[in-house]
Length: 161
Image (cartoon, rainbow, N blue to C red; front, side, top):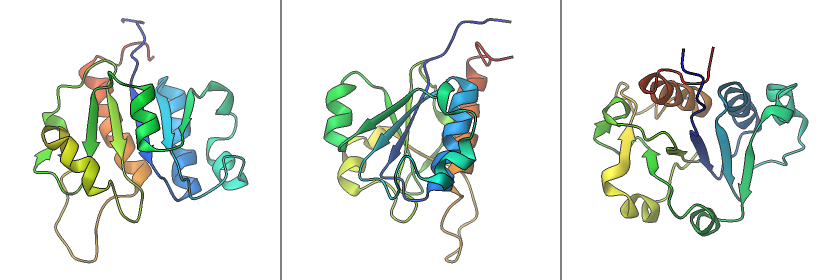
């Protein structure tokens, strides 16, 4: 088994629900994936609900927090950014994930803004699901897990046992 570490990255654009971010942080800690949070956040990073979901894992988390999307781009100018959105045509399994991919997910109530979508027209992907007016999308933490584990699978789960 190859123990070389991947440098996968999850980017959450203005996450609103602390339990989702807590669950995602736990997944990131256990897969050695960096977590990038773009403000404003809908919660405090010391909020008890956030820490409860990721309890005992915060010391393992590689966390980066940015003031804005522009701040994120300034600090990660070479990032290979993939947008996961319900507004895409291609499915997430069509991505040939780079070893240092940045997988970006939008906020729970509004997704990723259109101006960001317009900047990455070829890098927008979706998770297939039924089209129903009352069921907009999957839970954010579930969506992150689906896509992250596909990226890790493509690289043979390097560094994980």
